Length: 416
Image (tube, rainbow, N blue to C red; front, side):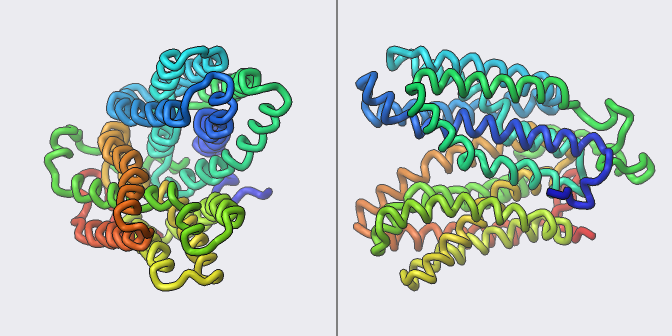
């Protein structure tokens, strides 16, 4: 595949973006998507309940969210190279230990520690690296990383299943751990650099005269006292809550409106394809509009998607719902870090973004349960869809009300 013209340069930042695209694909594939394949065989061999095994996975995400703040401080002060390399090595060792667990406490400990490593290897530190290396092309670079990583489940779910069938779950986990270490450790250790200036370069490969003046120092407590930050955080928390509530329940939702179970599963898989397609469209659009406009468009797209099943459950309209919903999820992943980076100086991205990640992670954790409770109370997904559509519209209102960025950024400026 021919690279876009913007990437046909020798700017080192593009090599970093491509390296992160590979490592994020492998990291998500092994640490997140492969897990679902092992639930049934672990249940059968070890005698644990489905809730105990699933609870360990929830613990993984909970610990990852808790670690966001210290990871953010480290990224701003020291950069990502040492952290992502060390966490990749730690994650490799823990996945290898996972293959040997024989008791539930052991498994819980492995998953909790793996959550720490995930906080230092998944999207958030990768986005911090991109923010440090790009300004004009930041959205494109983030799209490159997430476009490739969007195929993580497509690659690793069937690969994991094939390894499971051929070798059993313990050997399969062992092989995945070896793959994780062989790919992510050298790429993080050899390719990543803290910032362009370390190599005598400027942001986006521009000449030094084109670069903005160094930002004024920003204290985190100053950011946390600002109305701008909390309105921005609330907008993304509400939209995240809405998208993940429906994403988790998408199969039973489609079944409840008369879609066959196998067709509902196929539709769920199609959402992953539409996420990638959404990211493909993201970069060229993002280069022409502000990140604030992009966020408004993504939230509005999500609201439209969620409203469709409220008015029609015919085949064509449900196909449109799945398509728009998948594109909304895919672009939503990119919009939050892009808007944070545009709102604040890139040098402070890690710590500011990490605080927002805590609330976003809480929304991801609570959304599926809340949607389930609302369904149990009403006996229908209609109230769930109505509430989630309302939350997306509330996010549109919140972002619309944002003033000009207070520190070092300009998310409301039109890009050219």
